[in-house]
Length: 156
Image (tube, rainbow, N blue to C red; front, side):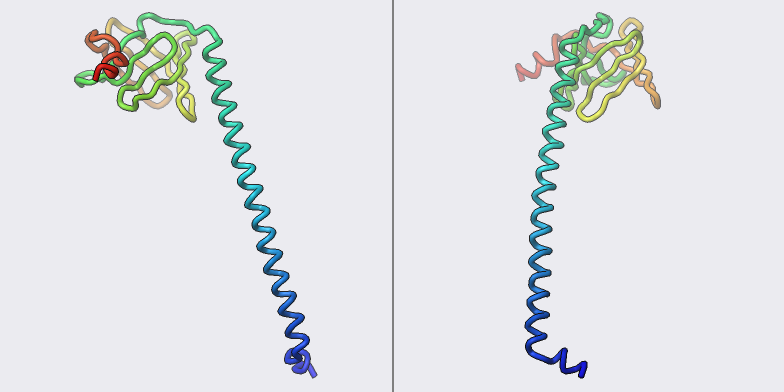
C-alpha cells in the first residue's frame, strides 16, 4: 500500500509541483536578499564618504598650530631622495604622490591617513626630525633646499 502512494502518478506530479515551488521560493528569497546587500553596501559607502568629507572639513575649519621647525622636505639619513614634505596643514609623501592632513597638539603630531589615524611625539633638533610612535622611532633629516617637492614634480 505504501508503494502505491509513491508510484501513483498523481502523487509524483504533486511532489514535483511542491519541489518546483520550493526552488522558486529559494530563488526569489536569494534575489531579494541580494538587493538588500547592495543597498546596505551603498549606504555604507555613502556613510564613509560623509565621514571622510566631514573629517576634512573639521581639519580645514579648525585652527592648526604650525611649528615652523617642521616645515620643509625630509629624507631618511644617508638616502638621496626625499620621503615627504610638510607644509602648514598637510604632509605630501613623494613615493605615493599623496597628501594627508595633520594636526599638532602640544608635542604630538596626528596624521589623518586614508582609513586610519596615526600619532607620534615629535621633536626637531636643528635639521633632524624625530617621530616617536607607540612601537618605533623614526628619524629624518632635512633635505637640501631645492624648493618644494610639489614644484619639482610639476616641472618633471
